[in-house]
Amino acid sequence: MNKKMPNELLSVIVPVYNIQPFVERSIASILEQTYENLEIILVNDGSTDGSEELCRKYAELDSRVKLISQENQGVTAARKAAVKMASGTYMAFVDGDDYIDKDLLQQMMDHRDSFDLVIAHWMRDSENGTRRCFDKLTPGAYRTQEEMDFILDHMINASLPGGLVNLKSGIASYLWNKLYRADFAKEIYAQISETIRGGEDMVFTYLYLLKCRSVLITDICGYHYRVRSNSIAHSTNRGCEIIRRECDLYDNVAPAFMAHPRCKTLMPQLKLKLSARMARTPVKMGFPPEAQLELKTYLFPFINLLDGKRIALYGAGMIGKHYWRQIHRLDACSVVLWVDEDWRTFQREGLEVTEVEALGGVAFDFLVIAALEEEQAVKIRSELVLQEIPESKILWRAPLEL
Image (cartoon, rainbow, N blue to C red; front, side, top):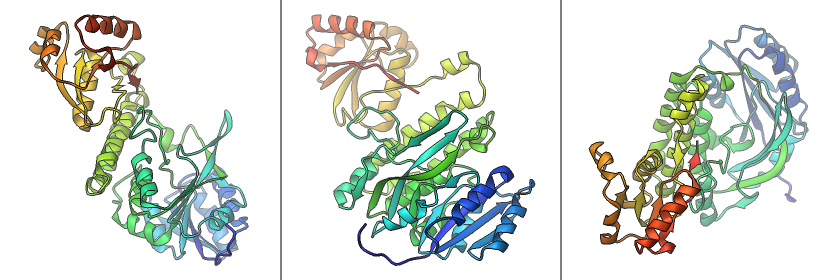
């Protein structure tokens, strides 16, 4: 940005819990920022490994550093305490085991202009090396109502609506690659329950985006996210906790989504996001491969491509059942007929499946073949064409796997 902007106070919030080997570098990287008008709030969340002593040392060395010490209550309570205390006009977050390049905050503040949210790229540092990561939406300024509608329609799943369900976030829900308006952040965090023990970053990000009137996606890159195999985010055998977290996320976000004018595009994104996360729970719990296979989820590959269309569904096996459930839950299109060669078996299971011949007596826009392999789909397509089903109406794509 070319115009000179005031040197406003920026509050930087850093939760700390038993990260003694990393926290010193994290704090130092913030103190060394070229943007100096900072308020750095460290929240020691009941550390027992010496992290608190390091935080206290920096609070004594630099007047910009404030320290909150509390009994262990989880990262949500830690961030809420800091947000409540913050006095800056803008707000940023840094996790205590990560670090930032010395000009990151200066660049973010230089680009803030009148935007409600500024988003940057980030570096993913792991034992396998470092790689640059970024959101899937095109960098640029989003200011008009049409542009902000586009943000909301694609923020959770970049391909929705109007594309394949690839479950790639349009805007990652991480807190730490963004610059926020402090007044918005305080209002949102006041709504978030302290009982959420993990995943409140998603609740915050989604609710914050609902409030935004403008968003700037930049190619700035200076945040280093450290991947640690023993971190809370990467620990295993926490199946019940994972499921509770997804329920918390839904309960805290869904009411606002359902009340929003863009509800019809927000809710399908949220449901698919949570379905994908919960489908990975068996892996996180260490289930054997055969159990994971049994729990594999196949996604209907035409979500929102067939919005409002009447479809006939061919196939009531595993793939067909997955498709049927997803179509009915997402309310994207309507199944006017479900057919299968072995329809009597599926009717005995209580499914509303009928014979293939019934296709001739029902009006539909498209017929979707629920088959895993292309070879099988080609065979079914040939048989349907012989029954005088227009080939232009017959659709097949390989199901997407979670």
